[in-house]
Amino acid sequence: MKAVWYEATGAALDVLQFGDLPPPVAGPGEVLVRIRTSGVNPSNVKSRAGLRGAIPFPRVIPHSDGAGTIEAVGEGVDPSRIGERVWIWNAAWRRAFGTCSELMAIPSTQAVPLPDNTGFDAGACLGIPASTAYHGVFSDGPVEGQTILVTGGAGAVGHYAIQFAKYGGAQVITTVSGDTKAAHAKTAGADHVINYKTESVHEKVMYLTHGAGVDRVIEVEFGGNLAEIAPVLKAGAVIATYGSMADPNPAIPFYDLMFKNVTLKMYLVYLLSEAARKQTVEGVNAALASGKISHAIAKRVPLKETARAHELVEAASEMGNIIIEI
Image 1 (cartoon, rainbow, N blue to C red):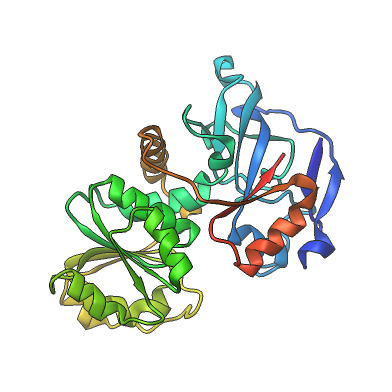
Image 2 (tube, rainbow, N blue to C red):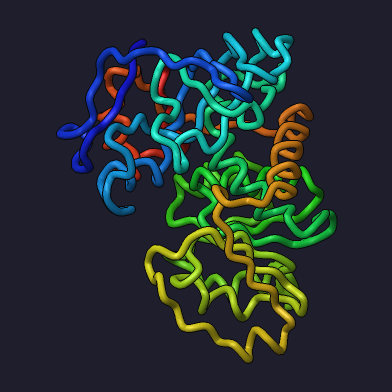
């Protein structure tokens, strides 16, 4: 089979190899998937670059997200799954071989039926960006009638979070860094867009909410944004945060948050509990089936040019997801 892999960490052009590898076989409880698309996420790029530590296996086929068709099943898996269109989660999490290849064997539970109205390119966006967004929005229950602040609304996760929050009946305020990104966030359905480069986020949020503040924040940059979001939280609000790159060790205004009964929820989508994963997978698929969710695909790149796709993600110059077509 054709595949892309690396055997040492480093720059994409230096370490990513394209060629032929022996095809895998579905073991007990596994399915063999003919991969059609593979999603490139920042975490994949950081792992390949060595920013997440030493290479964990002698050879790594990257990427946790992907979509394709089940071609064979292992012992204990219902043969009726053969031919099923699926999307994949956690393919490269603590595993040597991810989705950046023509074939992959993976536990059956990690190959989720892809709704009929959803293409393979969108399927490669669901394991990390969409699931991170869905869990951030709905992990504490319904959000109908709430006001939700989504920071970084032009990002891959933010764009989905806006849509899921609107799908759930919330009003959405989002932040961006420029006019082009504001237009992109508007396409997701945001009710209000704040340019944090030119406006005070907390002043604008309080103006838009008539002084009430927000019920929930989906936060891409916890440490960097804390000073702006802490003043806009209602009593009982939730901060659901999945990143803090600019300030990885922020000082937390404990009493300011405690006296508002704020819940700080830090989460990593790779480590969802079995119950949370079930809720997220089923919820994402239900939202997709509703026809109310769109997908921002920035670039489609052929398998042999995976290194270029990694460079695009590193440059953070595109709005939307980078997809490998296989």
